[in-house]
Length: 495
Image (cartoon, rainbow, N blue to C red; front, side):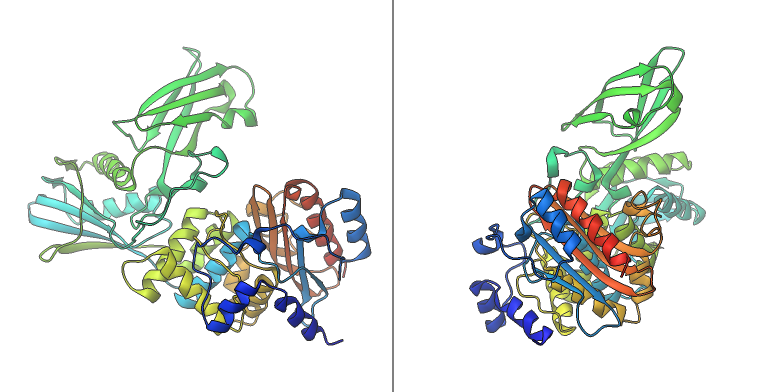
């Protein structure tokens, strides 16, 4: 029987609600709850297309076959090699970043850069600003310590020494009024829970410097940037001896004005930074960073923080240009940076849908691009574009078609190179790193509670280039699901 016909039957098995949306030209609203039948664990079904050794492993682990989707295709072949539950929309975890980054390359271009502007409101006399300084952000995902230092250093080189006024932060390019805070796995201080901001400094993170004081047998903790409102309650124990992994895993409990830090830190660890989300708003975080860096460069600031927007009559005095998108997607995909992916989706929304940028504008732009490329978007749900969501859904077939489409695209080299290299770097640095498979795959990983996924390209032992998508949703995903995933990767490598 024709294989394309079989795939058509698989697509037909999607929910009636999804079909109705497709026939009417409508899509499931971004972030909306999924139809109930999509969220259910479906009844056990016969395995179709999986190799015998994979079937045996699944039977041994007693993992429900309904929770697994697999799509494998030789890019030079006219039909897939393995097809299993490929039309079931599943939670993709961070493999969702493949959609966002590829859409960014297509809709913005690999040479796209973000601007951070400096405006003045008042007069400058002999290096003294008699008025306010305004920082306006346009969503640079990588405005880190180094680039922020360069921004302020450039202002000093242009002759500005003193600001006799306030620092005004203009975050108006993004509209996040309907964006809820996230707190996955009860870890509110972890950087992966950071919310985006049009002017985002250092991924919204505060760097805490840990230093073992051998003379006083204690551990000193200092935050950068300094937050005058934040009290650090230091309960970290000083221990002597060698430095171990546990010493880099202190527990943070951060409330509005207090950071309780506990754990142990060794004299052998020296000085190290550990980054966490503190309680400051994005605007306050930028202000604290500006104050500290500006003063370290010999500048003075007499005023405080204000939020506002650039007004008529304000004068643009400096613009910092970011790294290119082609560079930044490597950080997004290789290290699975959630807030950078969210900033990118918003930037897509601002470019295609106009100001202010919103997640829904970005999601609609990505969905339209996929549809224009001939990818069926039925059941596909984009929430924040990072995969840090319980609402996002994409099928293995949709991811497979995306990878196949990208392979034929002029931006394929940039896209593929942004993914972790198996056994070499990123989230795959320690996986198969002592195996013949090392260095022969570019694959994006995805992990949430009850979710494990992987998708990308593999160069097999015999020289074939394969597209691979493996999705597993279910309580067994982090255990037997991971074993099954590794077994499938090894089987594909030997084809």
